[in-house]
Image 1 (tube, rainbow, N blue to C red):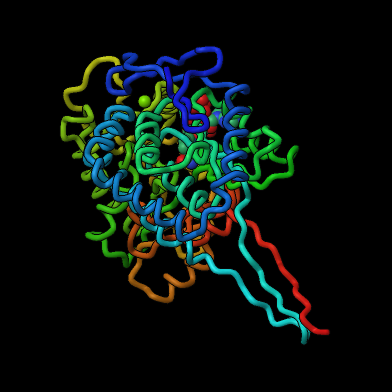
Image 2 (image 1 turned 90 degrees about the horizontal axis):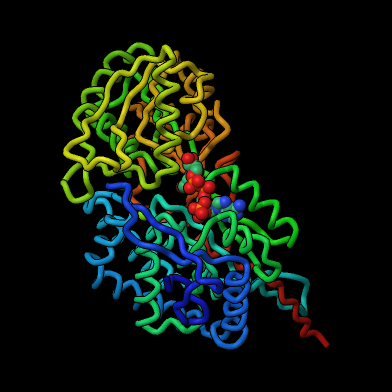
Length: 477
Ligand code: NAP
Ligand code: MG
């Protein structure tokens, strides 16, 4: 299977090995991808280095930006095709896939327009000196992306890197890379030079590991689990290259007694069922002030029980879990929950699905004890944990009481409390009376604690994919 893109040429892995890929809606093999390894990664890094040194590195920011904008237009022209590929590969309903492709196009538009606006500085220094701080690309950047939002993740990680002038080697998740392969072909058709974007499909422990350890990369960016994030850091430490890590979350939705519940409830439910819960920033902990605990959990339960899960083209709100491994992990968690004394308050409906598919209905559990795994560990499925709190201090303590700190939201009409909580709760993004940003291409995003470090999205991503040089010029005699 020619799913590896190296120096502009689509090819099989050097030893022709392949990986069978399953359709999550049926559990049946529907295609294969090349199983790249260290040899392929090495060829891809060499191609990227050559492109950077020989042509891409001397393109002006304006030229790079124009190319990204043209690709964004091409993506919009082919949006429906890409959405269909994304939907059948990941099992996500078509309406969600369409939204993902709209966000993908935004990444190209945003970073295409931003490429020539990442300005440096002039620093006042002693008389007779002119000091400039200029941004320069890092060189070759390595990108390892997961399966939950393949096309959005591709845009999020590659657009700022390319806008900044780097050449890329990317390892998508073999489980969901069909849209990425299609987008790469579109990019070539619009004029992306050979070697600027290289793709090595394959397993994480083979191609991903070889990429992370490669001595000729200048940065590695990874989105996935904290366990693999630690491997990536160990590999990058050997070569002393920076990491950008996005490792998930256990994000709280904090509902105070004075909240506007008509506004809060749909956002809380949307924040957990979106992409069948397979979202790093999913609002997985529902923290409710004691005096409205019964009312809020009953209203959320009512909404959760009306959610439908079905085949990607059946008009349901949720599709299957994307990978068999994740489906099995979730099922073992659900078995443990069955054996626990935590009440299952509500469950959504699975409608007209085929046997063998990886379907899990959304669920609301509560009250969940504060030390239970459902209150602390990322489940990465549509499972919401309701927990009561006493007062503002207790809410803040509970919100911060996990290893993660990615996103948080607060629902209250008190302006003073909104500001206090915004400063007390640890998170990379904090929402007040809303949740999530529908892609939020413009908004810096990333974690603290075990959610990782570094910032993607917005102008901040351009800082991550560049380094600075301070140029000191003495013009005095
Ligand atoms: P994962 O193991 O962290 O994998 C993410 C990516 O890293 C995949 O492309 C994977 O390739 C690759 N990888 C795996 N081992 C590697 C290694 N030693 N060196 C370099 N790359 C490696 O995530 P997962 O198994 O797909 O899911 C496990 C858990 O991760 C989930 O339950 C969830 O909690 C979390 N997760 C978080 C996000 C997020 O957006 N933050 C996304 C996905 C998963 P392979 O596919 O071949 O393993
Ligand atoms: Mg797939």
